[in-house]
Amino acid sequence: MRVDLTPSELASYAVAGGTAVLAISTWRSNVASRNASRAALAQSIATEEMVREIRTDRELGWQPILVATEIRRRKRYDEGYEVSATIANVGRGPALRCRYVTQYAGTWNMSPIFVLKAGKTLKNVTTSDEQSRVPWEVFAAPLTRPDGNGRLNHVLLCSDIFGNRCRFTGEINETSRRGDVNQPDWATWNGP
Image 1: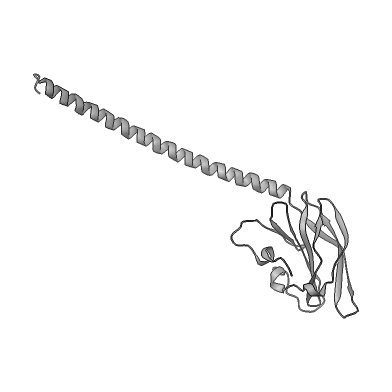
Image 2: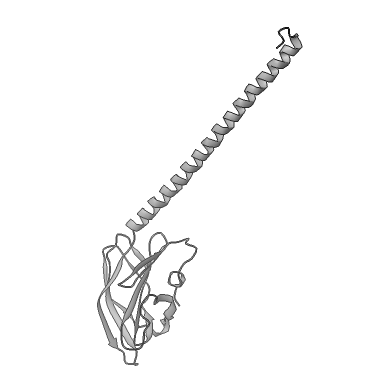
């Protein structure tokens, strides 16, 4: 190694050394930025998941739960049937745009639209409107397909305060969340 360096050689070695130090420093800064970016992304994903869970918890806490009791059916003068029931909302949220839909002796009928506050009961909700026949496919699944043997099927439909649609069959309670991509037919059907 030479010991007698000229000032310009010394300056070029100093510049090369400074450039190397700067390159290492830049590389370390890039690694730190990438790690910080990954951490921020992970934190963002975790925050979005937490917000979704909070929203779902809030919606479940304010969800209506409808129950039909005291179900009575009777034959009408025109050979049709009408079914009436007492409908109770045992959930913590109001039930909006409710419909009581029944199938008896092969015919589906539904009640007029009604609203039911949380903890309240509505007596004599009747499904006798012949002009509101309902297609089987809209509400029935997963109920047993009617075979005309006189079995009574019934479905309660409503919306909650968040715009979600709810369906209660007595056996299965389902909720179709507003904004879901694949909504079932019963959640999108609004009736005649």
